[in-house]
Amino acid sequence: MSDLTKLTISAARDALRKGDLTSVELTAACLTEIDAADALNAFVHKTPEIAMEQAKAADARQGADAPLLNGIPLGIKDLFCTKGVASQAGSRILEGFKPEYESTVTTQLFDAGAVMLGKLNMDEFAMGSSNETSTYGDAVNPWKVDDRALTPGGSSGGSASAVAADLCLGATGTDTGGSIRQPAAFTGITGIKPTYGRVSRWGIVAFASSLDQAGPMTKDVRDAAIMLQAMCGHDPKDSTSADLAVPDFEAALTGDIRGKTIGIPKEYHMEGIPAEIEKLWADGTAMLKDAGAKIVDITLPHTKYALPAYYVIAPAEASSNLARYDGVRFGHRAKLDAGDGITEMYEKTRAEGFGHEVQRRVMIGTYVLSAGFYDAYYNRARKVRTLIKQDFENVFAQGVDAILTPATPSAAFGLGDMTDADPVQMYLNDVFTVTVNLAGLPGIAVPAGLDRQGLPLGLQLIGRPWEEADLLNTAYSLERAAGFVAKPAKWW
Amino acid sequence: MSIDTDTARKVAKLARIRVQEDALPALASEFSAILGFIEQLNEVDVEGVEPMTSVTPQRLKRRDDVVTDGDQQAAVLANAPDAREGFFAVPKVVE
Image (cartoon, rainbow over all chains, first blue to last red):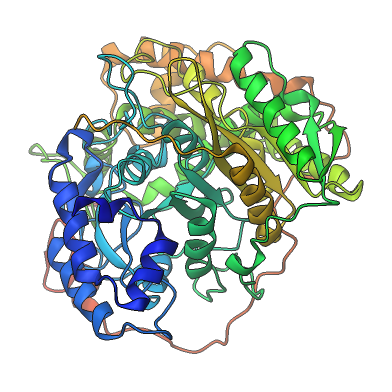
């Protein structure tokens, strides 16, 4: 009964609690689907033994007071360290690395009863928007309109592909510039990046520490609320983790948004954005208005400078974070020639272990932090970041509860289409999402329609800091109004 | 700003990434394209603006100055490419 894997987390939870279904049955169904879906290249390290063991344990504790995600099979992005299970961040330099510890997020998910099916493909060190920089090869979008294989987006491409193809009920993602929301939009699923500090970063391979946040990627908004609940919370092991109570996100889903104020930022009407995305945005605006929200035009004047600021700050932090991959403590070490010293070991190891995009970003980061350029690039970018955050503070102070924008400037594109493009062209994928990371805000992508080829398109809602509950409720209202139910036709 | 191959070579060295001599011109031109994009930031008036240090207003917590962990030598060394006699092994550092 392969339809089991199509269940949402909430439906599976209810069936498990009532005893209509066991986690062992559900998990076995997912493992069968995963084995039949190698063409998607979403699961890159499968963990069937761990999954079945966790499923049996979940069934043993099933009941009305079972934990939040008891018996729910999930996929875990390769960026999360999982004890004894390969955790490579999609990179050759971490080949063979099996952490001796468990990330806080996966610990919390397991404490909530979740089942791990395996590790999911991603862009190397989460640097990419198409999952084409992965050492495992491209992950593939289950959506298809012709002969071309399409990107599931990136960096959480494996997570998006796996959830959209019903290989698992939900997946973890991480988002530094849009890496949860862009792939969610490209595959017709829901993905939320919470407020910076809401989810512990401990045990997640670091890319840009001031921007990175983990979040759930799921089949609907209710599932995002349930899974986010299990992922959030204060962690003394992450010094930027917020010591704030976590509200009941699912209980906040009333669908009632009457009296809420939704801002429409004029700067997001960008040149070159397809008319159908503008229309989707206008339709979404009308849906929220019909649901009783007040729509106001707002301005976020520094929007244009978000991507350039990001491409200083993120590589700068990455160059520092990735300095640890030196061939000494873990992962790959290059074969050395006679007479090679420690510098040759570093240089050869990093040249062999890092892919092209990662090397490029580490070097850009090195350059903007180097003597003579630190003020001109890095400090200037941090000042612009302050201004971008102030733009949002100003509109929130004017009474705006949430901001509606498109999630991406296009639908999913073909794998390989961007190979010859300037790297900056690829960076433009994050034009609507990156501001949210720079300002530390929560943002959610919700599928809202299909383009004329039949590919999914998403809308993004941006919320006030720490108000994920309210944001999820607005997203829930939008989801109900949009009524997106399309699924990719199975070809894999 | 246009990056020449000498600068690209220097940056690669600082980043401790070996780049073959014949790959430097292409790398330099990629850097130039990215830095050209970044230079839009020069249009922004940042006079008197504080550079952001923390995106959420918070004071970092202090923990008690006590030992909370340790005695994990085997776990620490478990993933090392070369570990000997309880140490990480590396090529000779000092002549």
